[in-house]
Every structure is written in C-alpha cells, then in structure tokens.
Amino acid sequence: MSLLMDFEFSWPYPNTHLLHIEINVSGAADDTLVFQLPVWRPGRYELGHFERNIKYLHFFSPSGEPLPFEKVSRNEWRVHLNGLNDFRIEYEYYAARMDAGSTYVSDAFTLINFVNCCLFPRSQAARYRIRLSDAHSHLRIASPLPMDGPAHFTAESADHLFDNFLIASETLQQHRFYHRGLEVFLWFQGPVHPPFYQMEEDFQRFMDEALAIFGSFPIKQYHFLFIFPTYRKYHGVEHQEGTVIVLGPPHQIFERRLGDRFYTYKQLLGISAHEFFHLWNVKAIRPEELYPIDYSQENYTRLGFFLEGVTSYYGEVLLLRSGLLTFQSWARYFSRILNGFFANYGRFNKSLAESSFDLWVDGYRRHVPHRTTSIYTHGALVAFLIDISLRKVSHGAASLDTLMRYLYEEYAQQNKGFPASALYDYLRRWGGDETAAILDRYVFGREDIEPALADALEVVGVRLEKTPRTDYAGKLGFQLSDTGVVTYIVPMGEAYQAGLAYDDRIVAVNGIEPRENDFAEWLNYCLPHHQAIELAVMREGRLLSLSIPVSPTPQMFTYEAVPLDEGGPLKSSWLRSLVPDMKADSLG
Image 1 (cartoon, rainbow, N blue to C red):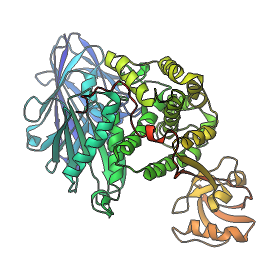
Image 2 (cartoon, helix red, strand yellow; image 1 turned 180 degrees about the horizontal axis):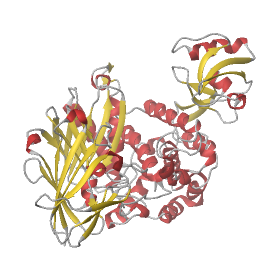
Image 3 (cartoon, rainbow, N blue to C red; image 1 turned 90 degrees about the horizontal axis):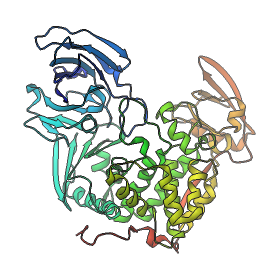
Image 4 (cartoon, rainbow, N blue to C red; image 1 turned 120 degrees about the vertical axis):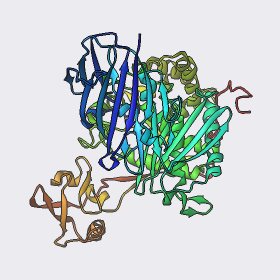
C-alpha cells in the first residue's frame, strides 16, 4: 500500500518570498512515519541544505488537532500518528533565491523546483498530487508533470516529482511545435519578445544532431522554460522532460544585433543544446553509483567528467555540426575553455576523478584556491581527446558518438547505470590501449594534458598557441577585480612569494592611488619603468606594504585555438556524427 501525498501550494504574500505548503496524507501503514527533505538536487553535486528554508513545520489530525513529532536530523521529522491513517502536514518554505535550480516566489512569478521543498516518506512508497490554491488557479502554468485538471498535476513517484518543476505567472508566453515525434514547448518569462519561429528552426537543427547520435528520443514531450531577469545571469538545470534556463539581461539576447544574428543569442543556443543533451547523458546515461538516484544522501561518483564534461563538449559540437556555430566561433569557445582550465592549478593537486568525488565537499563555490579541477572544463577537454583518439585509431569506425550510443542502448535503455569498466572496455576495444590510457592519465591521473591537446587539435585543423602574457598578470602573477580586490594568484609566482593574499584590496600602486577601474591600467603603466611594483594593500583592517618583483619569465599565458587554412585529416569527419547503424527513417 502506498501513501497518497496531496500537495497544495499558495503564496498569499509574495513580497515575503514565503511559499505555503499543505500536504494531505492518506494511507499510512505505520503508526510512526519519518518525512525528509531531499539532501540534494540532480545536476548539482553538492548538499542543498534546503531545510534551512523551512520557517516552520507542523503535523495535524484530520480534525485539526496537533500531532506529536520531533526533528530527528537536520532534514528529517518523525510524526506519531496514534492510529491515524490520514493526517495533514503544514509548513512554509522561504523562496528568495532566483536561479534555475531553486524555488522562487515573487509578485511577478513563482517557480517551484519540487526537489527543494517537497517532503517524502522514508519508509513507504508514495504517489503525489500537486495543485495550486484557488487564489492562483487563474495564472498561466507550465510544468512537464501530467495534468489532472486545471492547476492540478500528478507524479507517480518521488523521483518523478523531484525531477520536475512548475512556473505560474500572468505573463508567461508559450510557443509549441512538433519535431520528429517530439512535442516541444518553449516557455518565456520576462520582458522579452522572442523570435518564436527563428528559435523553432534553430532548435530543430541541434535536436537533429543529438538525434543522429542516439537514434531516438527517450520521451514524448520536452519543455524549455526560459526566465529572463533584467540583470546578468547564466544558469541552466536539466530535467527528465525539460530544462529551466535563467539568462539575462534579455535586451542583450534578443535586441542587440551583430550582422543578421543576435549578439548573445548564441549563448541561448549553447545552453539550450547543453541542457537538451542531458536528456540522454545524465537523465538516461549515468554511472551505476547514481542509478537509481538516492535523494536521502550524497551520491558519490568519480565520473563527474562524463556527466558534465562530455555534455559541455557536445553542447558546442551540436551547434557546430548543425551550422549554428562557425568553426572560427567554436575555436574561440575552445580557447575560453583552455584558458579557464590552465589558470586552475588544482589539476596538479587533485585528479579529475578526485575532484568529482570532492564536489560533495567543496560544492561549486571558491573554497581553497587551486584545490580541485573542474569537471566541466577539464571534462570537456578529456571528452575531446577521447573523441579524436577513437576516430584516429579506429580509422573512423568509432568515436565518442558511438560510445554514447552504446551506453544508451546497452545500459540506459536496460534501466541500469554503467560501470567505469564499461568505458575502459569500449575504449580499449575500439581505440586500443592508447585511447584507454586517456582515462588513466587525465581522469584518474594528473598528467599534463597540454601536449595531447595540441596533437588532437592539429588533426582537426587547429593549432594550439601558447603566448606569454605581457600585462601585469603575466609579469606579477596575480589578477584584480575592477575595484582593486585580489581575485587570483599564481601558485609560487612573484606575487605569491611576495606575500600577496586573496581578497587583499590594493589602495596604492607605487605611491599613487588609482581611481576605480584604473587599477589594471596603473599596474601596466608602471611595469616597463620599475624592477618591482610597490603596493599598499588593505588586509583585514590593516595597511600593508608589499614589493613584487617584475618577473623576467612569464607568470601566466594566453592559450588560443587557431584554425588553420589547410584543415586537418579528421576535420570533415569530426564535423558529422559517426554512428554507423543510424536508421534511415529516424530523421525522416
């Protein structure tokens, strides 16, 4: 027997950001039940601490009498039912954080990511009903969940509920189209006038490239929810049947034009392709330690590079193959990835596998500088190496495309996760020991990846150029914000050894107080005329004097992927999918 959890959501005072939640529970099989908030949300491999947003929580009998309960952990509550089968839970959730993975209440719209704020029973299976209170039933509502009446939805399990979202707004816009059997919804919240049909055409193009790899859609409908704040924001979260993307400000996306294309419209396409690729990679294909997902505790994996790095790689490759991104634009994107990667010395401290595991320790915020490497940027570079090595060694018989199709058919469609050994076996079979060694050297090991990247880029017609920086960062080994705060220091560089610290605020350069935004200019101006730069810095309320020698050897480099006129031996084949058993009618 399963519980029925009937949720009602309301926000009578949106200015408070408080989401009022009532759950009518029926079918309790035990006299004592434990309810829990999820520990994390899929797509974000860190503790969510959603319980911090619970303002109060109470249990009541059907007649309204309080039921005894106690909190048994930071996110668990145990209720004593005294023989009752039906009861009610009431609580308030503080929803003031605006991003794609959070729950947010405002006077403009309400976004509910159910994984943040919905309790689930620990010891008894449950079915879920979702409804908005009558006061909100007039709003326009979007959710991938099945509808069971106006402003009413259902979920067959906790996983189904937690992998979904809902937005309610008076100003929500919608565009719907069908593509190769998939019903696609584009939802828009914010002050925008989207080019609906241009987006439909462009989205179909990158969808076709994903479909060419996997052969079929695992679902019947997909929802793109775009929220456009008036300030700068870039964030996306994948779901089984959709994605939430927060991107702003909108006037930079849809109004500024560069030639006949939108100035940052490419960013919208890039994040959309990335999240859409997650429909297969992560939502279907994932390591065995994440199958099934356990919302009650951390889900550790050393294969985070495959979840996010491979997806980051394909997000741009889909645009490139579909013609939505030029080869020169892809090279500029790859250059940004390279510079972000090489600036992080954490790659020498912890391997990509160790860094994946330690996301549950560090989260996504800066903690210890240069402690770990990024599963996104580092992982994307490894994905590129694997793709090129498979194509090169197999003479075009295999690629990362064929590996993805193999994992989709042999594991995801069989409802199971893949072990790390499956990657080794496939890479060794089609790419030999040379390709399998990529995992040992650059995922589980900490070898320098730069020479391998230079070789791989060359075969697709790109030269990797490494140029010493001649500005203050390249000569002194640190970087500043516009307000003069130290944000980056090269380990064991000149600034490091001279005693400069993160978050130091520079107040004078060689005795001169720069105006705001002029710090970099003054530092660069002083470089040719001094053997050392004298800095006055504020640190924790103390004024310090530091002397940083101008280094004769470069402290930092700029990396650039430069397309070559003559191309490369694998360029043309790399620009298309190499799945050999693609059904002829799957794109027809």
